[in-house]
Image (cartoon, rainbow, N blue to C red; front, side, top):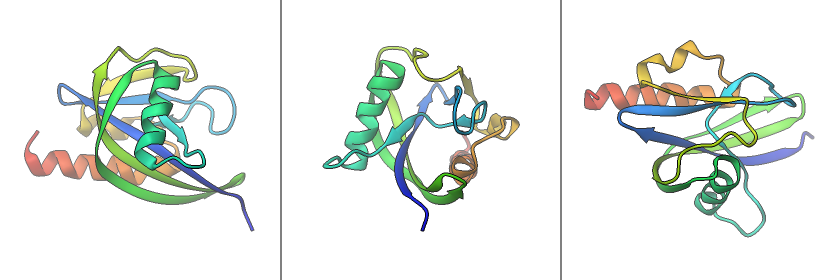
Length: 134
């Protein structure tokens, strides 16, 4: 049985654009994702996301509504990714682990090569923004 890995991702929205982060060296290098990481023992998904964004991007977010929960089987294990809409409360994203970050409109998200576990969230975000006419 493959290793189960529970992770969270932040869909940080600012001025109608979404923060996208490109993975650095290692697993899925060069692919795009919503920043975040593993849920540690004793943490709720929201607490894990706040901590991961502090560590990875050196900023503070307010975690809002859940976007999507997706399970995807990779060679290294089964990743269950829970994404949440987030608001940037303090700081500007800084590169500490990612190769690059970009802000894109929801309709442009499909232009990037996303990690497979993130694709259902990308599609949900696009539907969410279409439905509100943003």
